[in-house]
Structures are given as structure tokens and as C-alpha cells.
Length: 293
Image 1 (cartoon, rainbow, N blue to C red):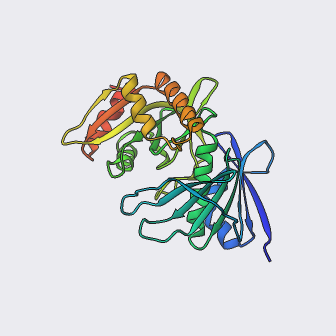
Image 2: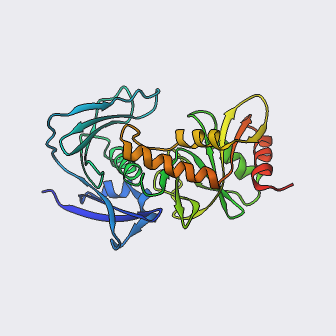
Image 3: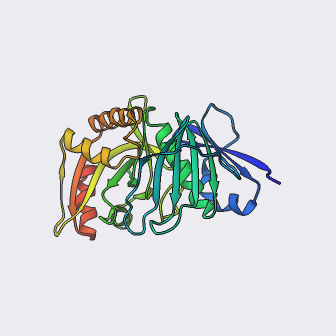
């Protein structure tokens, strides 16, 4: 018997819900959402339900991913009334999740054959990013540390050392601690960009329901030396925009990302950090962005 249980969550001020069968082992595996659990009050931005079957007709290819080895596969199709996302944990694995969403991303239904936790996490993360894109909110592929009451986001391509640089801050910068290691959220509140912890933190379990003003955005670039410089607005925009999550093939989402990123880079300093994965890199970076001698 398919028995539905529902939980509601609050991330960066946005409420969403998850409904699925009452298998406790699945809910327990989603403990990364527990710090964000609420009693269900508040206007719900979107909902996701796991279902045993999906009616999918006339799908038309919109975006086929080309993931690197070890990365997840997400293909997107248009269907009547919305979109279909096909999910797999690795490029070489068969599709194991089908996410059917309405055109405004307010309602999703997910069917899974396997890897249910992977599918739920990615379905919620995708719906969150796309649904909030026009609400002064951007989900960022970054590692974020907090120091002196501000959040510092480290961006970069996979393998360039975002997480390593955060760890070097924790080791070398007094008072620094990790807020999120993969997908923090920036939301502009009362004109101030703030960075929020989320239930999505990649391979590092770091699920903290807290937020801080953004102190700086730093793009990490692997180099044979340690040096940092502040970027101009155009360079800063390109850096942050390229690290934000969103379906740019859809104009409302692309416009939302553009507007939010534009506002952030006008209010927050953006830097390029050429560095080795060494202690000196954290010292050079922190001295510049914290303004400490």
C-alpha cells in the first residue's frame, strides 16, 4: 500500500515540501534536511512527491548533459505542461529517476527505479534552483566559510581546489568555519546579499541552517604561485554567473539569474585567487578579503 507522508522545509526563507511513502529507512537517509525542517506553516513555494508511476508522453529533447567522469547525468526534455528531467548518478549508469515538473516548477512528481536518495536530493535541488531564480536567489556551486561574521564563497571549476581552500582557511585563519561545501545559496534580503547554508553540500556532510552577509566572492585558479587581485564588475559577473545553477535555455530563469548576479557583484567584492594548495594561499587570501594586516 502506498502511504504518503509529508515534510516541509525552509531554506533561505523559501518553503518547500517533500511527500513520499513512509519507509523510515529512506526518510532517515535524508537526514541532511532535518536542520531545515519546519511545521508546515508559511506559503509553499514548490512541492515534490515520489510516485509509483508517471505518465510521460511526447517528450522532446531540450538539453542533453555531457558530464565529466564521476559526475551525475541530468537530461532535460519538454513535455506537455512542463518538463521532464532524467537522472543518473554517473554518466555510464542507466537513467534511474524521472522528474516531471510543471512549467513554473511549482509541482514535481518523481519516479525512481533505484538510487532513491540521489534522485530525491537532485530533484529538490533542481526544483529549488529553477523555482527561486526570479526571487533574488541563486544557488551557487561553491564552498563557503564564515569568518568575522561574514560568508566567503570560493568558486572554481571542479578539481581546482574550492574545498581545499576552505580547509586551508579552517586550518590557518582564526575563527573560520565551514557553512557549506558545495551548494550554498545567496539571497538578497533588504538590499543585502546574504549566504545561506542548505541541505546540499556535496561529499562533505555540512548541513547548517544559518546565514551571513556575503563578505567576498573568490574564484580559485590553480597556479604555481599565490596571488590575489580584485576583479572588475564584468569579470566578477562572468565568474559568479558561470557558477550559478539555472536552466539558461528558459528566458525567465536566465533573466532571474542575470538580475540577481548583477545586483550581487555591485554590492560584493569579487576576487581572482591564483594559488597553490598550501597554507600560504589561505593567508594571502584572508589578508586581502578580511582587510587584516
